[in-house]
Image (tube, rainbow, N blue to C red; front, side, top):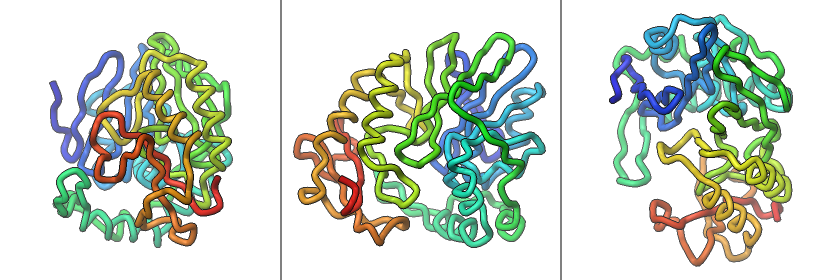
Amino acid sequence: MSEMKDYYTIKKMNGYYRIGCAEKSFGYLITGKDKAALIDTGSGFGDLKSAIRQVTDLPLYIINTHGHGDHTGGNAQFDEKIWIHSSDMDLCRQHCSYAMRKESVERAKHSKNYETGEVCNILPEDFDEEDYCTRGTGNLVPVKEGDIFALDGATLEIIFTPGHTQGEISVLYKEKNLMFTGDTTGSFVWLFDKDSTDIVTYIKTLEKMIELNAKEYIGAHSPRVMYLDDLLLYKHAAEEADYSKGEPFISFAGTETKPRVCAVGGYTLKDMFKPGFAAVVIGENDE
């Protein structure tokens, strides 16, 4: 069962809550006996703080998987520290700047559903654009590989998983062997932006995640959880990526790198939502 918390839809899963909204960027809430943890704050167009507080009033850790605005835009709604890898702090500051928040708002006004082709305004009815654009980053503090967040009944470990960004992290829920991956991996991973690593680093990250052998790998942009076989497929896509054979990709970010989609097995962008699709999006100098 799921229920609406204003702008947000919160669904109770097996040991955690999945926080969804029209932004199409999921956050995750894990509650222990004496503390709770929120993984990512999305774009923050709605009142995320109130939504969280309708679920739990426990002291809260807030963890950003990386610095992009669709994962950090809600940070400033909270007084708590925001834990983020030091390599992504400047990226977070950039994405939470007035100018980039303004760009995020404009995209939200003309948000496209790539599966249906529908375009609509996803902002809440009472959205205050000027207030949103001046919010900033929240109180950023550094987190690193191996750091532990103990919630009394739930133990979270930080895993450094660079690729999509220089400072991308994942969060391992040790008792349940669940790994919250942010944008670390998935069937369509951007590696072309200046904030990304090279593809070799991304492949090493996938190898690290595969070795951890989590029960589920839970990403930030799809309700479908990933399993070991999915990661093996994503690794195959990255290993065989060939920019010269890729399909041109139009994006609001990283256009100077002329990104191309390199998909496995002859798949194209038209096949994005079909089973077996896996791709990396790389720039002309990323191989």
